[in-house]
Length: 145
Image 1 (tube, rainbow, N blue to C red):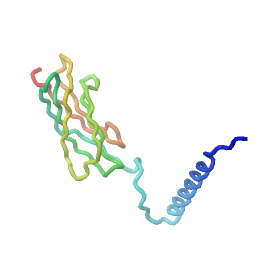
Image 2 (image 1 turned 135 degrees about the horizontal axis):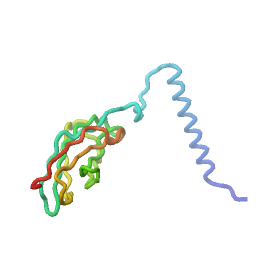
Image 3 (image 1 turned 180 degrees about the vertical axis):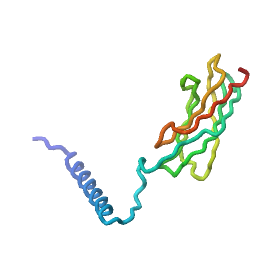
Image 4 (image 1 turned 90 degrees about the vertical axis):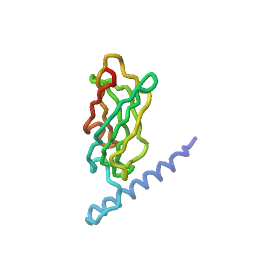
């Protein structure tokens, strides 16, 4: 008969989860305050694009976006912004790798955005790690069009 070596790991994980659940229950039952990090449903707010510029660069454009977000730290921050055509086609996305709690608003750029011929305006929208794309977007004219 072959026994699984995973069983002890599963048992340990279940025991840890049970201890965590009992700790949570005791905090709720006593009404004591907690130092646990807030869950996504407890934090609201969106990331807004308050300004954007486009500059011709090589075969595309350099897009710079200024974002104002309600960053609180790693649990909630503006984690990306994207450039879209008026019909919603995404032309480029700039990933933001960390919170900007002490740098508000902040500006970041994305190079090499190819904007199809005939498109005269683009929309730049920011994404919040928790709330998604829910903030104010910015519409910018494509230079020379």
